[in-house]
Image (tube, each protein chain N blue to C red):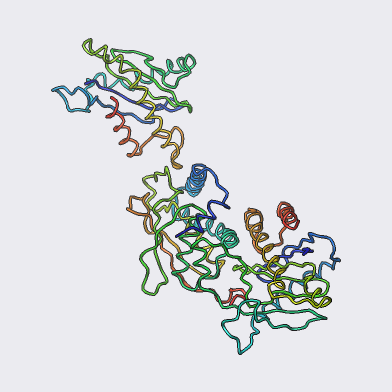
Length: 157
Length: 200
Length: 183
């Protein structure tokens, strides 16, 4: 039951949305399903890890013709996956390095599942952008958006 | 039938549009046109109050018209129609109707040299068509032909069709011009050219 | 039933991309909100008068293309508005309900509202009637056929209501303005 930290970063490098959660798959005895199990010290630095990988995203976007940039960074035992939208909004997903036991499983999961996850979040983001009362780089406060992201999380991670 | 000119009158009877689409009609002074428009508007309104007391509800538009000579061989028809309550059912059920609502006012003036047709929308805008005279009337006189009423009405029906097209064009090119203010003179080249296309 | 609205919609209504339409209306409303510093009552008023100006022009197209004649009862008016008017301009057919006893007031229930796709109201926008422009359009259009009406929203799904409902009330018939020569 891996823990994840997902954030959307605007074009001015400010976070627009963040969510901490854990996988609903392979529930273990400890912890509530869906509730992240980052230790307090890691929790603190999650936004920093995400932000520090922005430079890598900036570089990686020129080396790929895909929006999904794949695994772009690793720090402090945390992997960072990135996705960049047409509008230069970055989606970042940080998660713990999987244990050896399910490493193989995870590697396979990485590309296809994460790509689907990011694509669906992007669809949601576009819908959010279509709301006339939302402008680019505003914080996303819509409870509906939050709920739908959580549903996608449940579906893929 | 040749359409010489098209005039549009606002609700108050002011001339807001004038287009001599086909040559053949001599020009009047600018003031005369305004007077002509105002007069037709006034006669139309008064004519609508004029009705025979023995009026029978069964008479159809243009059926039992009365004729009042204005000048030599001019006819002046003002007829009363009973509003058919099925008209709007037709609209709901898919039949289009002609938007002309001029039922009891002055509809046409016919002379040897030209005909004038007056149409009105539900909102009170008047469209006036000046056309060549009805050829059948003259044939009847000279050749002593026997014709039925449908023939006589044919030119009116044609004019009504033209009115319908003008009204649609008006609603598209005048009403949707954001810089046009209602009731004011229409100065719109696009509308001019569309009207000219219609008359061909 | 509503073939005519359908016919006009199919054959003689210019189509535009509905998202473009929705987004255009959305940005107008959002811009008004920011211009009026989120004074939503003023925004409603402004939308209403914009709608009025559209209505007094749009009625000509409606009449020209359908040839609808004068209605003699409000029931007839309601029917024409719903089945022909809304159909030909927005390709929707709202429901009519809640007739008042004197038949001068009724509710229009919009099952779908093409103006409000994608929209989520800001949390402070309790007073905003997002689609108020429709009220203005109806008021303007009916005024041009000599019906003085009041139109207002009572429910909107954007605010969490179960339906979108607007009320239309006939104040009076402007008899003096009815053009001569009708009947």
